Image 1 (spheres, helix red, strand yellow):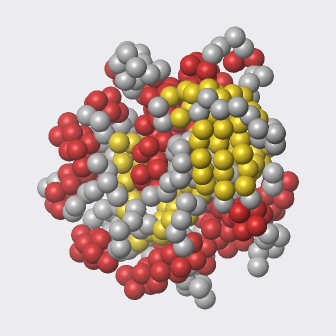
Image 2 (cartoon, rainbow, N blue to C red):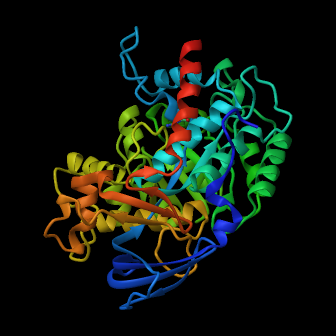
Length: 473
Ligand code: NGQ
Ligand code: ZN
């Protein structure tokens, strides 16, 4: 039992079974804004959506609602070092790889309670920021000494506990990690906590799957870390063993990875994946930053999701994803917050659009011509891609979906005099997360007036953990 109280209020089965009916003066549905929308929720799932309805007594009424955004790529523990790697190192040549060394030193001391406290803190912040489900790309399997825990899925399950406490939907993606570079190079000491063999990995996945079950709220997938960290043989074994479900992999985030891959096998990482495996709609290629025009078109055709993490990619100096070409080819994409340098669903979408504006020196690039606002197009695409990548019924206010709503603050001055047509653009480009007043996750109000309902105890546990970790540093 962790040292802070474990009482997962948010998924308490009795409360899940609770029925609630919401009445929204306007709600953003898959086909756009609709007025007078009455949404009945049972067991955390939307049972009915009535349009042009009238409110009934007992309905919970709010002005404007949009669907919560899925977050497809998280390493929750990295939230604890946000803002602590922003100084130039002694060599004066900071990059992704030197950041990674800092990150390895940081994670070296974290125990299970620390991890759970940090994950709960990250997930509460995600909910306040507009994310109502998360794909946890989890690779910390071993103890600080590099030994297995009694339950090899111990640390994975701490993320499930944090999801329970906060109410966020969870697709847990245990990571297979075996090498430090292409061709099975031995892992470095900093990577010792990540390493498993195939049997232990299968055991972790089976335990996670048994614990989470399947439904509208939780799912299990697999994550071969990257082509740097998994050999081709073992990647194929994993894919053969895996029952249908999400497959997430980091690919082509850094030019060094592309160059090393070319040197090793004559193909680029995404090219290799497209040629040597069957990349399908169950896949999420995380980052996929450095693509040729052919890779861009082929990835779009595959139906896989590109898991873009615009704020982290900017923070790490990764490069710019060819979003205009990919989006133009109907490529599917979703948003991940990866290192959680800053949690803001609107901010991620804005950063993605702005990266294109800055490179192409143009405006409103990821908008559908003549149809939607840029913010709405960005948001709709990220909702659909996010649901696909997590394999959860999320990302829409629609029957059968998890009841995940963001209630916008109708009294916010940034919305004064504006109709609902301007609401998403105002959120994405102008107001950011201050526009989200309440968040409903699986039918429960988990953020009320911008604050997670468990903030106090989550913050207290996080403070204890951080004070301990930084004192030991
Ligand atoms: C990760 N993060 O797995 O946390 C990685 C760094 C690596 C990002 N790629 C480690 N942003 O890729 O080797
Ligand atoms: Zn990552």
